[in-house]
Length: 404
Image 1: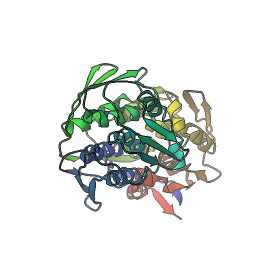
Image 2: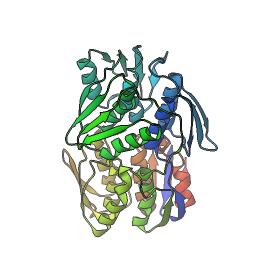
Image 3: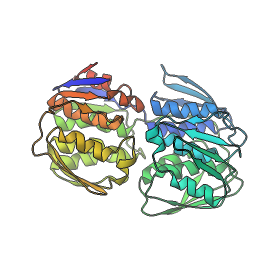
């Protein structure tokens, strides 16, 4: 899909879409619960459907009323239920990493697969875990097969690869017969995402505690209790909407909780610093903000961003992708191992069509810039992954968008 955007100003009010990160967590907790849970304000996206598909494969009943954004989830006992076919996780890193430990509860052989870009992401935390516990873990390039039953006890996990591994363990460990601890080797990146998982577990009656800054305690033999809950607005995607305000827009983004635990809530403070000019910002705890911050820096603010290493292993190599596309605007980008510097001195309209790199956040970030300069993006359908209504939302704000 090719999207063309003409120079235009965003004005009006728009509600942030429901949080994809929280949606995954609530769906899995509901799927592990004894009884029927109701999840309100659940928005459809490719990633959310990946989690729903995997839950259904394990025996969970999910009735998703898309029109009313409500899901009715009847849980299953993951210790007694295993999928008969491979779990296809699409491009969702959360789905793959959250489900794998849960598939080590039944003792049955389970295969998990996904899109090539997903299966290239690091999974060493789980392969090492399985090796240590003498569980089956076989990588076949396009899939991972596991078999065995996890044991309660002490787990040691690197904190600088992805918090999703820690969250995945937190879903499964409460169902084991003994207590467990997770010792996280510093530095711990994306700690807010771990706290989002702990909050979701608490909603469903499961208790996890921080013993200290780098140790989690998980009591065994716990029971997930069915619950009615609501998905809060997503700060990650709200940043792309609020970003229009730094480009001359007048947009009010509603539907966000001020007391949210979402790490990407920091975007508002980072936007303020961008407007002061050429800030030094660390994004190790909020890597999903990388593309929108890079785009706004390119539009005239400049900036140096540290903690960018993990952006290279997302849906695309977001550092390389943004550097490539920003060059088309005349922007110079200096890329280091764990930092990015952006120099917007020659910012101008792109002379050629931009590429979306099959990455929803790259497409949305580039759309912000095109609202100033005009231009087109190939592969714009990537927004289906997290925010399918993005283009209709910005069109309602007055951005001139056409699709071909």
